[in-house]
Image (tube, rainbow, N blue to C red; front, side, top):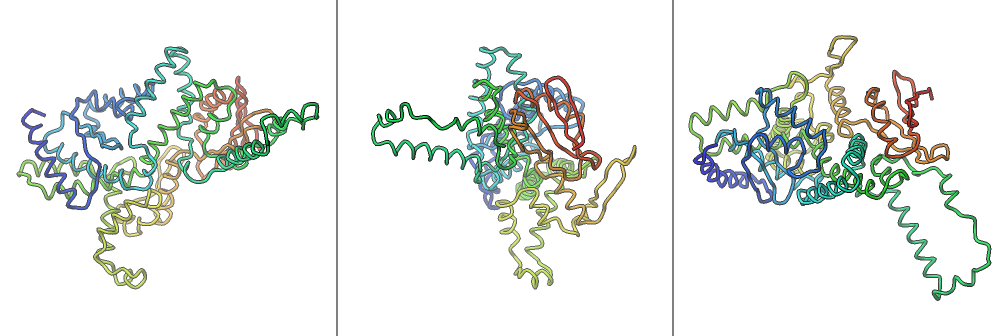
Length: 475
């Protein structure tokens, strides 16, 4: 953008912001920065402007930058869930492109601020990640870069296996509280600091910690594999445990974005289209905007376009609550004229799974020509078109962010401190190549043999890694 275009863009922000508020959007203060492609793709690869270094981020940067250089794909903006909200715009964008992107960003910020799945995310994560990066740099200086990178490799191999519902009552937390309460009760029973002298020479009860080690733990399957290992592994030094907590903290920040991708992008697309229709555009700008918008919402040949699917569902919700059919009036008591109110209510309470389960209708599935397909032998084939099965298939793909649901069953398997994991099979087998590459990383963190129970071709198998080789056996 030229200096003149930047000035015009700054002036247009007031108009766009006012129009967004007029539509009912409510967002944090915005900070826009226009940056070159190298910067925005660095931020895109790292996920943040100031995160710790890892080779995988460099790999992601190289892939995205190459696609940009060959005009295969383009990142127009990067918006950060924070307060104030930061948005980085590509300096190669034209004035009208940045206007549309700004309208898109205001809607994203509204979603971040009000959607309940983002309620527990830190709004100061930019600063937190900067501090985390500094701590990891200190560990690299103290313990060596190779050792820290090897730890990051292991931790990031299982970083998606956390429990984002950390705020809901947890057994482990309640157990710790009971232990603390018991200790405080015992302490309060002592009338003076010298009461324990009377116990000298009295035979003490046998050390209960030995028996505790023999007991199975956790008491219930624990989805938070990364957290479980960071708390209970005997193979980690304190600084290594700290790095695992950093990885978990940052993944908890990103997780709501994984769970609301379709909703969030659809919401932003809905409002940028309406805002852009309301602001003054000349003929050339209107044509350029139309081309850009159509590119955003066009169907993908290889999968779902979240912008397109999300936009269509939002528009359908608003239409059905604004002008309900006679059947909907009788069955649900809809009075009509409630479309705007309803979409703001849904924006606040749902995530992608409930959004699709509750609002992807038969008519929409048919209109969007949605279907399920899979590879049969060497060819990809359509395997399902019935709308309810298509909807449930989409929900299955989105469950747990699309990652396998694996839990810790026993952290003291065979009473030998070994780790037993179990895959909750949902009809899709694990990627066995990935499984065999990941188990050694888990072993590196746990320090003892690691087991993983799963189902392959309808047969229950138990994979294990003991530090030297992968083994498998029927269960």
